[in-house]
Length: 96
Image (cartoon, rainbow, N blue to C red; front, side, top):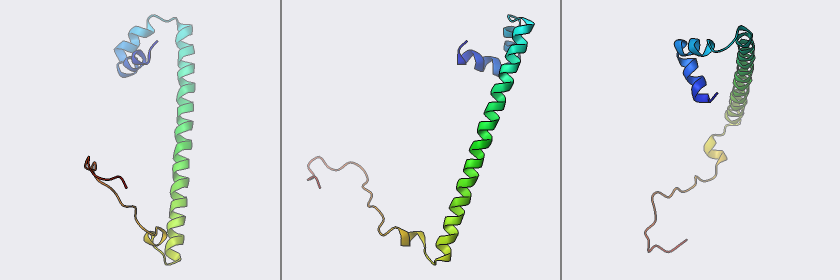
């Protein structure tokens, strides 16, 4: 079964019913178990990702606070902003 077929089944209840008619009750129960496990795993992954993002935000806040407490700004940390070149150089321009 392709991912496109699974997407069609997930989006449309009638398509899901038609696909379910082709399966036995045992197969349907097994499918429900597998889908339940997949949902649980996906929820765990999402929760872990959210915790990692929250931890990253806390670390950033701590760093910002430490910078402010030291009386510094982000400009003090970066000695010179990089020069940005825009567009393509002329064809006859010497290479730097």
